[in-house]
View 1 (cartoon, rainbow, N blue to C red):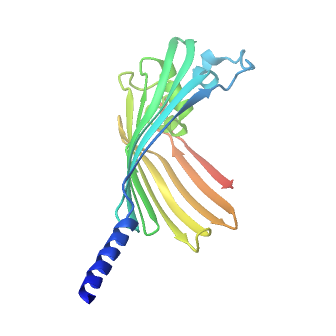
View 2 (cartoon, rainbow, N blue to C red; view 1 turned 135 degrees about the horizontal axis):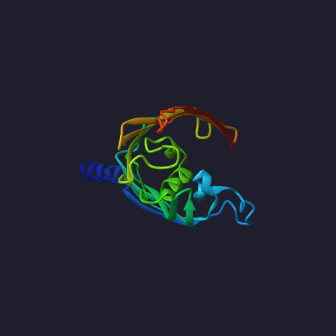
View 3 (cartoon, one colour; view 1 turned 30 degrees about the vertical axis):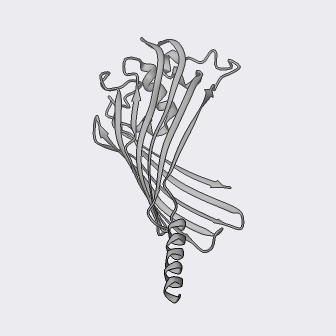
Length: 247
């Protein structure tokens, strides 16, 4: 009887342990919208042709989607794998300086692997930026939609260095550590680094960030260091931003 009771107890504990191990999860997110910086035409007289920035003030459609596979290893460690695509299409059709614009498509496809465990959040992704190289509007749309794209090696005055390039391949690494005092009070610090692999090697962005939460409030402070590749005039510069956010 005691033996039977022991077997039942062991089986019961095994079932409990198995039940606490979360099953893998699949998640799909989709979205989209319209963005228009000038719905009333207030910029109608803006000299867009000379600036080569038509896409900045013209309406664009956005689409985005993401598939995420979450694999819990145990109660303390989790792996995540994701594939996302975010894109923009500008509706402007006309001329920018001496170049014509039509179909200013641009976007970013991003495969990502992420590890979460023991306070660490470490991710490695390969963002691949794409745009229409035969259309100056395509590159303008890329810079307009993604701030970091203005610092890639393609950034001459207004145009891509090589019109045959239609993708820019990068690596984005993030390492963050979070220390929790309790369920609602914690601090987190880390850094994200964006490195361009192709068509040239370059380090366009380094983004350290520190966050903290307590008493129902959260403070995030991020320092942005963006480094622009030299343009056709061999001008190279860096931009710095401090982004505090209180929630």
